[in-house]
Every structure is written in C-alpha cells, then in structure tokens.
Image (cartoon, rainbow, N blue to C red):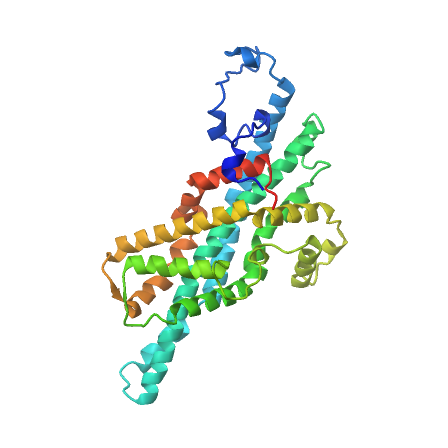
Length: 373
C-alpha cells in the first residue's frame, strides 16, 4: 500500500476532488473559469471538459449536503449519546461517596477499605479520561470517513450518468434511506462497542497504573507520558494484552450482523431484516478496509497524540505545571471527559482534529483513492 507521501507523486483528476484538495489545487496552474462565456486565462485549459466541470459542481453540492448532515446531525447526536453512555458506565460517584463516609475512621479495616477505594478511583479516573479521548477521536475521524466514502459513491454514480438523477431524493446507486442507515452506524460505538472497549481500556490502565502510588508526585509531563502509555497499550503497541481488533468497537463486521443487532434492540420493528442490505454491506466493507489501513492507523496515532497534548495544556492553564500527589490529581483527571465529550461546535479537541494538516491530507487521498491494506 502506498504511503500518504508516496501518493502525492500521482496526478489526480481535478474534477474528481476539486472541492476537497486545496493543497493539491495550488500546485497546478490557476484556472479562471467563466461558466457562461467559457473564457480561460491559461491555454492548457482551453479544451476543458465542461461536462465534467458541471458534474464536479453538482457533486460538490451533494457532498456538502452530506457533510452538513454529518456535522449538524450525525456527529452531534452521536457525541451526545456517547457522553451519556460514558458517564453512565464510568461513574465515580459511588466510590467518592464511600471515601467520604470512611473519612476520619482510624481502624485497620477502614484504612484497608480506603486504600482499596482509592485504587479503584485511580484506575477508574484514568479509564474514564482515556476512554473519552479515544472515543471522541475515533468518532470524529469515523464521521469524516463516512462522508468521504459516500462522496466517492456519488462521484462513481455521476460518472455513469449526466448527474441529473442525483438531484432527486434517490438514485440507483444509493437511496436516501441507505445513506441514512449508513450514517446511523456512527452510533454503533456507543450502543454495541463501548462495553468491551471499556473493559480492555481498564485492563490497559490497570497495567500502567499498578506501579503508580497515590503519593507519587505527578507533573503534567508525567500525565502526558502516562496517557500515551495507556493508549499505546490499548491500541496494541508493544502490548502483551490480548485485545480484539479495535475496529470492531466502531463498526460491525457485516451489514447482516448490524441489522440483526438493530432488530434485537427494536423488537417491535423487524422490517429492517426484510430489506436488501447489499449496498450497506458494500459501504461497511469499504469502511472497515479504510479503518484497518496503515494510513488510518497513522492518522489515529497522530490524532491521539494531539489530543493528549491539548489535554495537558488545558490542565496546565487550570492548575499550573507544578507536580502534585497523584491522589490530588485524580479528580481533575476524572473531569477531563467533560471537555472531551463536549458537543462538536464547542469542542476544542474536535476542532483541532478538523484542521490538523495530517488529518486533512488523509481525507484528501481517501476521497481520491480509498486505501488498500
């Protein structure tokens, strides 16, 4: 498989990705097009293909519509659902209340109970923070993958026609319902993947934190190193843990499996089982191929690193950079999920990922040529 840098050596047909590759567009002669008079500034474009130009403009409109649905409906709803699920599954309230109840007791049993409670709070706090960062990152990247894959399908359909049929609600390639069903898979992580994800994240946290004592001095640099160590272990980097493929947290293996899960969750509605899922199967298969690619893994690694760096910067602003005992740091670590799972328009971490050059470049080439493993 070609790396992102190697792919830059190839020439990409301009109408194909006209609206998504500002970096590459700057490398070709500037083109001034007068749609009505067909006048050009540069001679090499005098024979410009107007049919393809029209298709590109129509495709851009359709692509922007999908992007708008993803940005204003799919991702915000998925983030809201994810925030509720993480809060429910990784709630520290019970343990903190128990600690308050045993405060001041001096018996051996009370000391032992408090130690065990603090150990649970230690693991749970970092599990909550790491889970929030990982799921926010993956959900944001996944939503962009969806948009680009749907955009590719629209382009392929347009090349087989004059593009006029795509202006309606449905096309022969993908119906409106099929697009909506595919976009709805953004909820798979929160609905079906989160339980096993949390279990494996907790295992990674336990392994990393077992040598970290509650009275250990933690600087912001230590927090940064600890978070990256947890995430690397979770993702399988130099890990002895036996984990499932992390793609399975995000997306079902097949459309049939997804339909069965949806039907089981909505027992009163079995109509989805009767629908043809050939096109959904194709979309899921293409998406899994992208998520399993080495290019995407590189983007995930870069994105997680950027997220951790921003987290540490935010913590420095809030409490300074001086080292403090781990026990005093834990409440702040547990609270990190709040900004991480904030709704997209107010989420600094999501906005950071959207403008990251490495992420933008990946989606540029994804739209042009979906990576192959």
